[in-house]
Image (tube, rainbow, N blue to C red; front, side, top):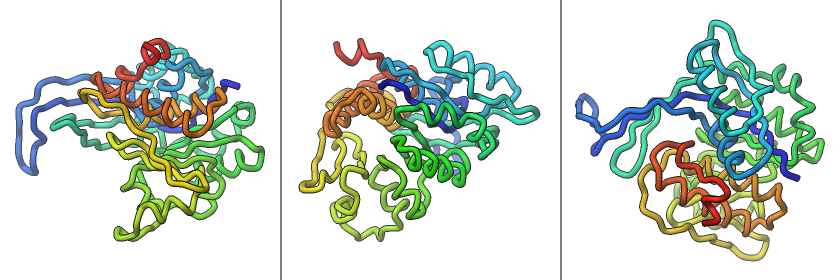
Length: 293
């Protein structure tokens, strides 16, 4: 039990670092610029693979230099690329990331990611049905995400739905997902909860399913009897980009290796905390050896 399939976005990140974030109409001098492989789907695939999982990525890239860059990057960290389609005359997805003031702001251009349709899923259905767990995000079309959730639910395949960028989810999607991993802000959006609704009242409705990530405060979930908070690890933060993706990839890796839910969350917290000590989403993701040091 170690096979993970990730269906989702593949981007190239254009990362600008600065001491301050520019206001509207303002120009500031930054410190550095890098081109880095990214996308929530790709990040989660890389995170799980670097931790020793057998990972297959399902997605689409364009027939451009960024697409080839993405494929080469996957292969360098042992992610299976046989289920990635190259789409002619379409650009690979791109994310513009500003890292400043110990946080990040991101603009995403979907590009080839929105060519991940139901026919792509049907073509690679065998890989999905052979998975121990399937990771999903919301940077590909929503109807495709729901299609995969229904397929996995029908065939008793576990799923992790990372609902980002957050939108209101259908009751069917919430029911069919095995695990859902929003932060507190995303949690209210995906469930249509009022801002005044107590988050602890929300979480009690979804025992052992809804795991709310809270950054340095850890992760909160309801085990059916008690609300459990699994604490984060204290580290010196360099770059938070990809911390959530590291959490999801590491969580999936822990689940397919047989860890109980609380232990799987703790493992994912450790990986996520380690990831923010370096610059770059994928570059900061730890290997299993780094995590056990």
